[in-house]
Amino acid sequence: MSEHVQKPIVFEDDHAEPASVASSTLTFLFLAGLACLAMMIGFTDLGPAKVWVSLGVASVQGLVLTLFFMDLRHADKLTWLTAMAAVFWTFLLFLFTLTDYLTRHYYAF
Amino acid sequence: MATNAHAEGEGRQPIVAHHFNNIRQQQASVRFGMWVFLVTEVLFFGGVLCAYAACRIWYPKEFEAGSTALNPFIASINTFLLLSSSFTITLAIRAAYKGQRDGLRLWLASTIVLGTVFLGFKAKEYYGDYEEGLIPGPQKTLVDDVDATGKPVLREVSVFAVNLKHVLEHKNAKAKAISDKMTWNERDRTQMFFVFYYSITGLHVIHMIVGLGLLVWQLILAQIGFFEPTERHVYIEVMSLYWHFVDLVWIFLFPLLYMAGHHSMDGAF
Image 1 (spheres, rainbow over the protein chains, first blue to last red):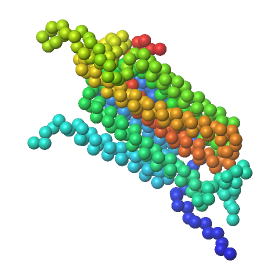
Image 2: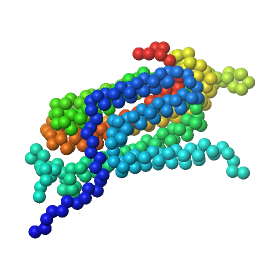
Image 3: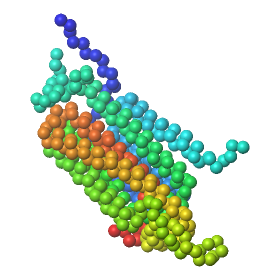
């Protein structure tokens, strides 16, 4: 009779208790505060800087949401690699598309 | 030998599927699967936003005018609704983890309500845009104009351009100033901004509807006790990853679509 052999765990153990109510509330309040800031920026005339300031605030919001609400901070290395792959490929998508479309008015000779 | 993890949950299917060694491996796989799916979603929205970026850099005046014509107040309310729904779904995960059946149902239902109200406001916003005639289309009309020598002429322009001019002139002084500086060709080209606006927010709405469908399904599962083995909280968790992603997309749509123009608190609500 063959004895059952436990195979090694393929994935890194990424178990973590879900965020506490206090922690989730704090994250929500922080995100809501940043949303208020985004609104204020939207109703202010900052000229060409407006889009960059707005995107900066949105990026901070996105980072907080990903790290805390999506719990990336407790994720295993494979999940981090996956999330970073999304950022990297999106960067390439924008880089190659915009370097083409925004340089078409330059002549090659 | 059956381990606790392979034990049957509530007399139905086993908690751990046969192709996994244990519950930890299964939970890690489920999470990883959703993250890989989200990578495809990032690139999906990334493609549209990349096209938006190229066109906005080419035609900044048209995009500014288009955004100014939108209703920023509904979009602001919707931002807070989505953030709140991200909060409530996080509470749902915790309730499932702790085995609090009533709490789980309460927070799932709250998330569904917040998401549905978001869609209600979105429908109101679309209807407002429709009533103002801010719909790109091929319809043309004739308007009084002057040629290069100042001689009065009749010019054929799109109905959209006429509607945009009307909306901007009646919005506020800043919007009127933007409209006054635009040529009819530029007003015509503002249709491009609205193509992006309807495409991107439309895709976002479709994602919301799919998310709401999944939430209703999970609420039904919670009702019949599927999540009673608390190891199954991971299904709420991966669903929340999708829901948070939809929120994340909105966080970027808000400044790019609604706040790209000039807005004033005059006439708010």
